[in-house]
Length: 557
Image: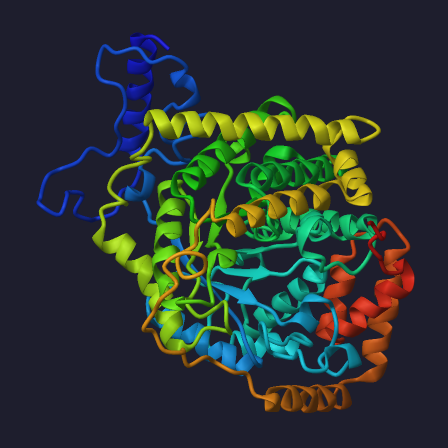
């Protein structure tokens, strides 16, 4: 790009920056030196391919979505939390919000993630252990008691039974007196990544996509600020993928959901802004920053060129980041504080919109109050003390970082081409479904994980406390344990709730839900009525399994 075009771009950026709202904050270094809100080529300089880097707030958004960077607003501190019963988790949420958290992120226990009630035989021993147990809308009421849902953005990390959990959240908001149309938050809902990595599905892909399409339609019409789908690369990376695989598989899934929305006759400029993303921030600092920058650029280009999006918000890739759970070690776990800080900094320099920082003891158990506070304070130290919020994309133009961004992007494009080849019609959706059925995704992830594990065992890759610097004077941590009494009490409360509801109303609502599933009618209103009638998560999911069946992954050797 020649000097005149670069200068014109800087002028466009300056006009947008001047018109944007900025925080009332001190934008100087620790020594008091003023810093510019963005840096780029010097006046009169040319820069080859600068259009691929550009300016913050301008296509292709490599340098961020907003001309102000974090000068306009900082990322949302959204700590992921959930354990025991709804009352215990409610207390943790209030602690997080009081300590400066900007939003909530709900972790559910394994029975809930699998669409089962706490009193089902398969739930035995798992209730409340890796997240909060939610059996019906009444649990949601307790979970958010004293927390104004109309004023609090709430993320829920669940995919298989995401839609029934969502309608229970809506019922809890209704019972608070909230205006449902003004709710703001994010539901994960991403079923593709379940077949690819996490394995928490209920049905075959097609019924899940039916529900997701209904949810997209419902939110676009009724809850415009709510984001019904968070496309998740986090679990793909945690399963062992490379950074490029995480990026490519995640964005491919996102393109599949765009194709789903278009197949429903929705306007891409209306529904695409309701898609968000969820990435892993691993410990290789520059690779992660490059991954995030490449993600924005790829998404914007494909949404514009392949799917016809014209509004800027439809081109924006907004994403939440969680530091890498897989990078945490049980050996010398205090070192995890350092790993988490480095990973969080990579997410910030990559322009994340919200962030969760893992606690040092999460490789051993659920976080204690103290370790959860350290994780929260890690973000606050980075936000308040380090100066990283002063300049948009401060590493932009780095020879190394730009080359790495380009290389990850090129690898992702090669993967997209391969996925499209897998399908029968050249669409991303057909390729994803074929790749799931053939085990293409899981096989590639397994191979990447195997290669990395071999490098660890040979000492080519090093982890402090694991295969290098293993001596320590540290003592064992006190870890949090969820009492078995939680399960007993949850089952007791569920039994009482079932006994106290109107059984005829509940059954009629479930029957109506099944009847609607046999039509092309949107299923969300019928499911919402079932939740209002206090139908349980397990009952709703069982009713749909009776209609749609369940899914078993093909055996592969």
